[in-house]
Image 1 (tube, rainbow, N blue to C red):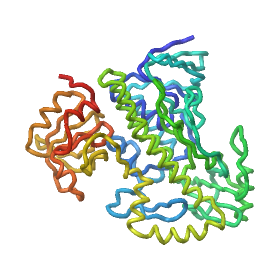
Image 2 (image 1 turned 180 degrees about the horizontal axis):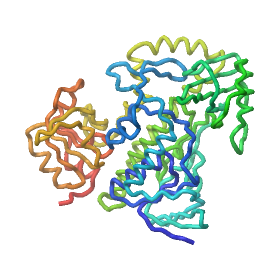
Image 3 (image 1 turned 90 degrees about the horizontal axis):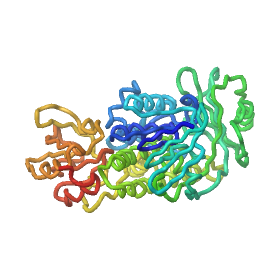
Length: 492
């Protein structure tokens, strides 16, 4: 038996697990990631990024690693068209980036930062002693154990960590099954937001390089209990029953199935065990929100857990992870359940689709839905204060630093530390924040141009957490209290 000791054990090397591992390394924590698969997956349920995930990647300098990105102003809510370019266009998403590519980029980044990712290691259980966690796993060389102060389950909808930890996972079972196949050698007109026929729903989406994704769901067909993926013959037969077209001559590359089950853990933390991503919430994968919310879970948790295990902040900071992310997960389930009704409903839901199509053409409704799906409307309770920026993500604005260097606010977050951004002549906030060096960088600057909202100009100074959210605004709360709440006791 082999044994390791580390600061955090992460179960699962999907997008959430790898993002979390990288964030932990940026915070100075040691991390071991245990992944049961021998190699990174080539399967890709998610095919792009929402606007908030783009911001998250930008604040760590990751976007260039993905190459050229195609912004898509169009979108849909349960197959009802929505213009995501409404207003200033910030809600537009990126399409055409496979989940496999995302896993590869995040895996390379985490490895460069020193994360210890061990593939072919299946977590079988753990023991939480109250002082730490001992994780048991089966690896290529037999049984192994890893001890750490904390364990995070990023191991998907069938999470071993969630089940072994006794987390409640209430919700609804699937009422419909969708069959999916990525295929080659098939010419098919795109059906980007789904097309309804009397017998069910069809979706066809070109993926590039001659690949097409087809998805089919039949009305009145109960979900099957499966121990493996369906065959492509099953997908082709269902497609023919619903559409009348024969796609059986296509060459399948990946075949899978999924349903519209919706469940969420009642708590994201139990003692020294935490959940993130699909381990904490499962739902219909509408609009690729699952992977995106999972990545954002990891970014919210990473800097907090890293600060706790390295002794910079007390463990109570971890309570804010559930407080901030559980409501986001609950909102995710509400909107995906609503989309399931529209997306998978039969003829009885057509009048509702027609009415909503008219409603969603309005700019206010489009902005509301775009913000809901993109995550741009998230606002955390970070403490006292009423300023519009408080609890929201700092906008990306051009800056001129004290030494004359031109930059953007997003670049200041690349090291994953807190930032006290001082945009006024008052030196007081900077003197206070310097007591927390090097957890918080004090950056005097001026705006290179006036942002559309004007909110940052009015602020004078803002305290920004490592995840990009504003924790304090000058003239609206106690800076010392905000620093202690998010960064622990002063360092000097």
